[in-house]
Image 1 (cartoon, protein in one colour):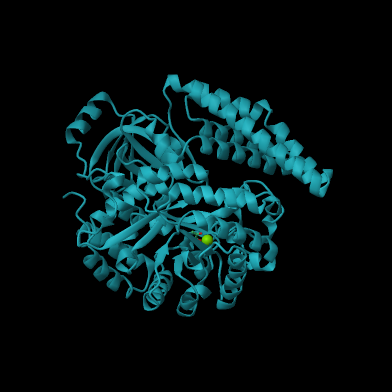
Image 2: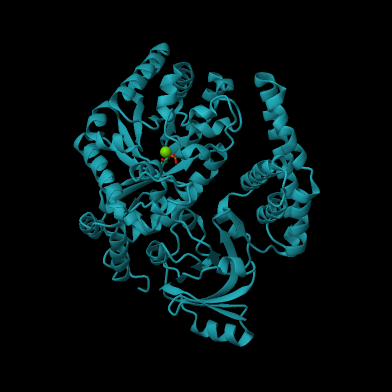
Length: 580
Ligand code: PEP
Ligand code: MG
């Protein structure tokens, strides 16, 4: 038995088993019952087979286009898949420690990493990057087999308590809070954000536990007291009994069924919730979670490891058509490829890697390679015959770019006489501060705006999220970010075009009330986040939210804004009290 002490930020006592989430590695660690061991090891073998196939495909394509020397780099990775120290060791970890496959791969990778780090030979030390890539690929393929934390957690018996190094809103929004009954985090910074989150979700929580996520083994029973801030690890039977007697949980409404759409605030403001989609497989979750359409299809994901030039118009058409038909009569927003130049002609297994580089990216890249953009636009125009389609251009910075892009689109439309140009809506992502600042000039050029806060925040604040030294400065509640959002919302309103928000902010239960207060009524997010955001909206008063936003916009710092939101929630000024 061990007592850990942190800061209680959301009241209630809960008894459950620990599930560990380490954001640093984006891997969740949880115990599996004995009868799931075989399934987990089989999933690992399947992920290995898929990874091998992908690597062989990449190797073959590179050998064709760029010669054997570059292709040979992938031989090392293919060999690593058969190295007993990686997959073999992960298999052993699953069996002996009874943990999930993704965590076992991560553990095996860390062991290999230690060995490489100790090596003198610079060539061998460099191979460490290859091991990281192979382990990352295995985990990616394991993820494709099991859909995100919500589904993973559904396989755990009984109530669980999440112990995380840090709980980001995007993960929080995807968890199944009927299974995760409380959470505790190591991080003490960002206290307010996490606290606001806990109160919005109405779950007991402790923050500031320093290294609990490293010290507690997955599956260990724990007692969490969100009022005193105490976490008891491996409590005695008497302590568990006593905790059960004290156990209180804020009363939460069940997550409303998907057919509860359309959703409105308590005072009748209609809010539209759509889904961000990367893979066609994600579409099955659309109905389950009650999305009203696809607000963002990130088309670059269709490339999954293939050079851009190799994807034909017909192939794109077939995919877009299938997407549109499966979602119809609800609308689909397809964003043209958001890639940067390093990814053209190279593999794009991880489009997220490019996120921080400005330069030749998104629409700029398309306009610099008009043949590639034309091919995509032709495929989109053809597909628009099959249902409501909105075409969206990413990384727009100026009116000229939009005019050029629309010119190319008009050319494509004129090639297909059957297409009614009026049924194809054209919009832009507002994700670079320049676009937000000229939103009033862009609005007359397009049919809709979509605010991409992921990029907007980092370019507005000049923060590279992947750089540890400044990533803490990435702050959605910075007054500059909120002002940009207000500016875009106002420009859209003045020109009578719809505006939605599709960055991670949209799925942050702690922020969505403020966004409604800023006048936004359309959001697009990862499908799994829709139920919890719907619940927050159903309990929200738009009038109070507007009042709150009005005050927030006058505050000078993000910290004061967070404090104000926290106090407002605690006083249930704009949302029902967690204990009501
Ligand atoms: C964004 O920038 O907020 C966005 C949704 O686009 P992506 O995350 O694909 O860059
Ligand atoms: Mg973006």
